[in-house]
Image (cartoon, rainbow, N blue to C red):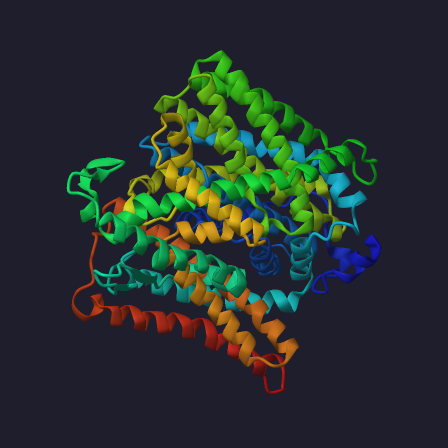
Length: 637
């Protein structure tokens, strides 16, 4: 890898003369723009993550939007201003992409989220993470420079440095936001004018169902993750819906009339619909798969943990001091306040000490690991949910050993889980953001302050949205508007382990299937999430990835293909933002009574209407990207 000076020369901002670019010092415009984007990306990520269990890192979209806004409102800040904005975007998004895995689980177990408790726990998790990550950042970013690739940091740096890239991509992002918002507004999420669900159900002899939700946000996620990930996830869904559930349905219909559902004695097993079988049996096989996948992932991390801690302790200081005063204060303050908050919430000194020590140790360990993941595979692919599941299983077993099994104890356990997942998620995003700052020769101390502010904003937004959506998040079964795969799994495992009321045979079957996947070297968690999510969700994600695949097939020129895919990611980011923000606004309007619930009528309620809407969505993604050929190349693509 080239030296730091060479890198800085490579990424210098051609749109702003270096002599006029401010590297240090505050800037109100930058802070305000970054705060707004932190709110937007936190809200968008919270909504999309709870809907599909998948999130998209905000670094590149933040860099694209920031590049455009800096030119208008803060040109003197140049490249460094753009960097601070993308860092704040990542700070807000990283909070949501962590908290949504655990916080809704409190609602799923039948409790209500206390806004102030969630806020305090989230803030402490964010501050503790920044403090721990600041201790290892100098080693990971400076001393391991050239050894750790930080792939997403490199991509963000390129996005910041290219004004043409930012301008072109900003147009596609805006188009995606508009088209995604309009399509979402037409559906029941907002005005309810058109049916957005394509659905087919099988016969009595072989009970199956296929569905696909015309959702711009999910289609955008599919384009971003690509065909390989989307197809792998859909394989899990296909297996669940066309093999496991029909098989279980066949046997449930053979049950005697006096046999009732394990979780609800009022439901006769031989009268269960395919949706009920999937929700009460198949889903728990997926839970066993995810549990086993999380534990296997955690065991694989043991060498990484040992190496990271050893090398961090032995790291030589160079460049900026490892762990600034702000980071050290955040670490110590958050650690102390975690015990204080734990005692205030529980009024149990032993529980506070045990849970506090466990959560701090597990968080510190996985913050370091996730920061290292940012350097190897990037934040988007880091197994945050797997590390969180493994941590919560350990803590749940400790709670059981000490006899803390009540609903209130489960709620306390999940609050500590919110602290852990927030800390893990923020740790990776922080390391990735600071690597970008290092690559452009910016001030990492300044970035720490801006990133921390954005993270705190993200906590407020994420907890607030969870409270707003609480009535919808409490709905379970086939009618549930949000998939919540990770939160459902965590709620199921923690409350089930404590009470002993789980269909353990299904959990064990899922574990066995996960072991087979592991032996075949297949991605357990990706397949398991597909197994767990509704087919309506994974199918539209697959369709979105299919647009990218089709684009790759019809484009023969590699340079043109690179431009199309990059602009496609920008357009998809707009779809995600537009679909999620407009969908969130629609739910708020429905909850507050401004809009009444409306169901499509007549032809607009048919499968045909949904298929037409799906075709419009596909064309709105494909045709604008196909036009990049004329703009970027004179060759036939």
